[in-house]
Image (cartoon, rainbow, N blue to C red; front, side):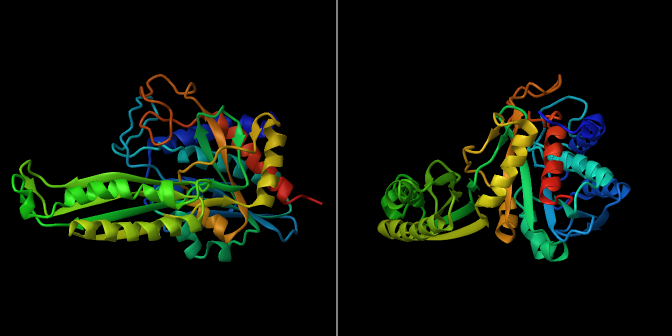
Length: 397
């Protein structure tokens, strides 16, 4: 592993910042304290700091040499509305909020790279370090773009990284094409006619419509889309009634759809609307569906992915660089940045949890788990990757 000695030297300082952020988590669009920490460090290192994009986002700009090319590196800052089960010293001080996805670590890795690049200036062009709010359901990347991110801070390419539990610590995973799925949610409100449970013939049972929908909608996955096209349709909620002897007037069905392409998503949404209307009509009920497309699929660009993979090999070697990592049906709003600019999104292994200190929760060290903690040993690995990416993309003549 070819780590930058200087980053290894100040790793403990950046880890202290990471743990401070972990202890003070902030939810989407509330990352005021986090943004203060980031902006203060960037200003200290000589970056031109810009705040307010995406409400609480921070962009640091650093130019070196006379080159006209530019690059963007992105880290997310927000936490989750989750009660932390860990009891170590840096656990969340705010009940009901937790850095359970490692965004504190992502911020730390990019800060470490920003510090080193400010010291070395071994690149020719413009570096934009992008600290983004509201990845967890707020679409902060989209909001920053709408606020003029790439107009104000041009980027010829943009790159992102996410820690990935279950993969050996320090191993990089990437692939060209679909890396993560789109995230979409639906709600179906079924309206029937209530009745006494002993006399169901007097009403129209919306619960039976909901049950039928739960079965019928799965035929879109098994019988309508091509078997080689990946998609998930999961019903996660069915709510109806509040008494054991009354058939209610209404039932609500909610869930999510995940796909790797817009074409498959179109097919599924159109099919859902057809099945919802037809199933309700069969029972003599009515049904209305709302379908929200939240995050598009995260699609890596081929050239930038190959470029990033070469840098990964330089840092951790061939064996720890997996260019065929399995894509996930989870979603990521970095997808919006990849729609706007060419780039690459990658995973860095967080290990299996052995790094956690005494007092950690008894659950697994997995994302969105109350026993999770970021592995601080990734800080010099991820930061070295960021630095070498910049140096290779903006080489000094």
